[in-house]
Length: 162
Image (cartoon, rainbow, N blue to C red; front, side):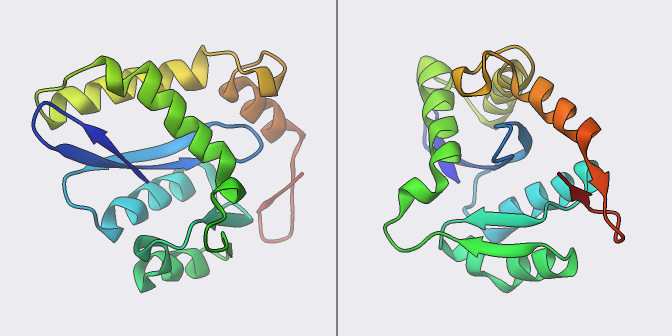
């Protein structure tokens, strides 16, 4: 989670990012900083792409809540949390937040949530589909994600196994 400053105030942003592919699988923007923001992004991710085997987060209250952990348990997802002060455990999403802010958020003074949502949607689409990544050998997150998905074989519960 992070925040997106606007002309007046800021909004909170949650994203589910694939660790190996850097693909933004789902994201949500909200005025209140609450668990629902994160659970909605997780629910969309599971609905669109299936449950991941492991979900790694920091130890924020949204990620230790019964709503979040219950959703993970119900989907059969292993819970992994960073240690206290271990921001490098989640370096890929931290790098995504930095890119998002410097390439998009800080370049705009959005008037409201609608403007912010449209601007973020455009940039995240660019990030996933057209922005090459050095760490991905110059490929886009979408290209790596879909290449990886075609190589996967489902296990007996229908979950992906690479």
